[in-house]
Image 1 (cartoon, helix red, strand yellow):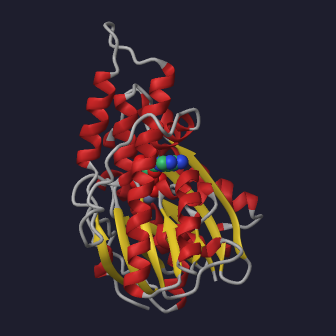
Image 2 (cartoon, helix red, strand yellow):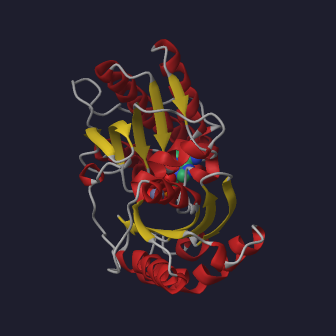
Amino acid sequence: MRVLGIETSCDETGVALYDSERGLLSDALYSQVKMHAEYGGVVPELASRDHVRKLLPLIREVMAKAELQLSDLDAVAYTAGPGLIGALMVGASTGRALALGLGVPAIGVHHMEGHLLAPMLEENPPSFPFVALLVSGGHTQLVSVTGIGEYALLGESLDDAAGEAFDKAAKMLGLDYPGGPLIAKLAQQGNRERYRFPRPMTDRPGLDFSFSGLKTFTLNTANNARDAEGNIDPQTMADIACAFEDAVVETLAIKCRRALQQTGMKQLVIAGGVSANQRLRERLAEVVKKERAGLFYARPEFCTDNGAMIAYAGCQRLLAGQSADLTILARPRWPLDTLDGL
Ligand code: KG4
Ligand code: ZN
């Protein structure tokens, strides 16, 4: 089955073509990051308009790269939520209409299910069951996964998501949006010994997270380090970035270890934009070694938003006989644990 996948939930237009027999045939991505950078975050209205501008050219691009025609498609999958409603509507209406025009089934995919299954596109994929740490700009969740659509929430952030915390810390240091990759880069020059930031909620039982206190701690540290002109010297910037990254990574690692112990599962999957973080990958590699478990993640470009994960997730559901009716479904909020199994 050949499935076109469309992702437009936030600030990335992603399109990909996945074949259930041959794997990923082609993919293309357009990031709106530059456009939103001067506003310090995603402007929803601009995001929707840019998806309108880019979606059809990207669909043509992936079809051409795979040397296929639209008539070769067996189905269309689009992100139906959660995300920005205007942005979602662009992909959902285009995907639903394209499928109707071609006379093939369509399916609305849950964005976080897409992230969660993205490591399945890699050479050595995980098998069910596993513990998944979903860490993106909007979500931080630990999930027990026993099959596609069989998701039990083990814990989640009570306030900011991990990616959001990275973005806000970056803003405090005067870095651009999205701040995660920039903090990670700056942290490489940092001195690990200079500051120690708190590891929120790790001293009590449970698998929930909270990053808002860490955010305040970072803001106070940054403000105390400013000179009379309000500037922070480059080494101190790097030291703060390093201490912040360490605190987030260590907090996530402690909870992942706890989740593996609690469930007895032997595989840990990390997904979402923050799973591209090199320090996190290294630290979790140590954790799984101690727990005699395996660690799985997608290649960096499939950790952040992309069309391939939507094509893959949609394909699995379509193969199981699921599909959408003619309603154009777009849900800004959509809890992951309300999804149906296959
Ligand atoms: O999954 P994603 O592309 O979009 C959402 O669904 O939210 O995640 C984007 C988030 C941003 O907050 C970004 O700063 C963060 O992922 N991110 C990173 C890294 N790459 C992206 N955070 C830390 N380290 C990275 N290398
Ligand atoms: Zn995402």
